[in-house]
Length: 165
Image (cartoon, rainbow, N blue to C red; front, side):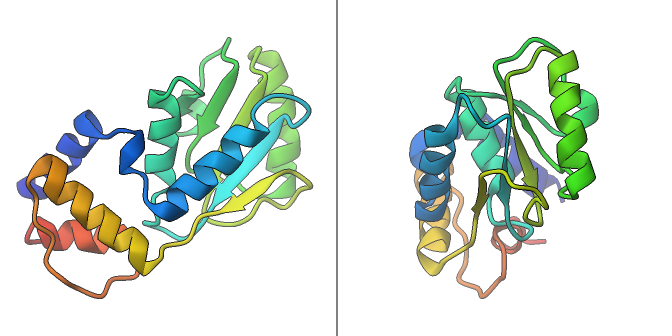
């Protein structure tokens, strides 16, 4: 498991905008287009392991938003925050607007597995074969990590295989 953690740590310290897969880049561009008024909350959603969290990290690293792993971690006074592992239910999304107001935050991007149940901009992230190839190429090119061929439904499977887990 230490090889797996080692790879994750290398990803966290070396990633960049050009590491985005084609599907991640498409959603990135859509989110960037919606930054600012009038939308207080928007949603990036998709199955486990398609790269939603990674997309949040990239938005943070680009200085477009501040990434937080959960709502409980969010601090005050940010223009845009990314809230990972967020609820998608309508009551949560509606209540989030008040929390943002109280914390002096202009806008939030919530990351969830399911589409938010509210009338907000929602962007679905899916995993394609091209995405898998770009992911594998990035690991090899930037981290010298070879990912054997496989047939996994998410990027975590490929990462675990690369670590020999």
